Length: 191
Image: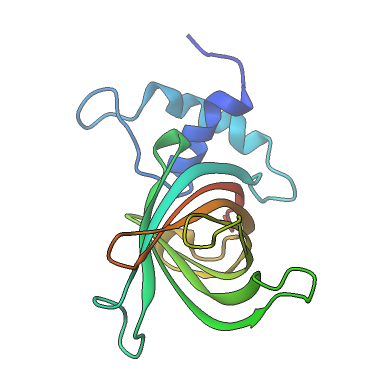
């Protein structure tokens, strides 16, 4: 039975078809029953490009001084768990920062390279954000950032889009940082 086109129900199919998440099957070796909706989805493309896909998920990161990329003496590594089976490991390294304005002296702004790596490819982002301590900065700091896709590999090659990241940073007992944020935004596949 063919189901009517529904943007919400077709998102997992679209994310699978465009390589953002792995594809589920109803039986070994057979495509998902939702695959028939892909025809309807493809008919809804604009100018030959598929529509952008909404991203929503939870990101948990920790700071590290070991296990970072060569040349990085510190970094943040984490995991994104999102709707429709979206899962990625993450890596972030700030490359610039400044203290906040005189009226918010404990705040700071920063920018750096951020990566989301899925089993289908990697999204390379430029993150620009602000941290603002809530009272005692050793207790909790508000964090918000904008991430713009600057490149992508694998099945994500050519994707464009952006994410908004918002949440809180706390100190771990060992002095490292623990970050819990919500990620929202969109990925616009190239194909």
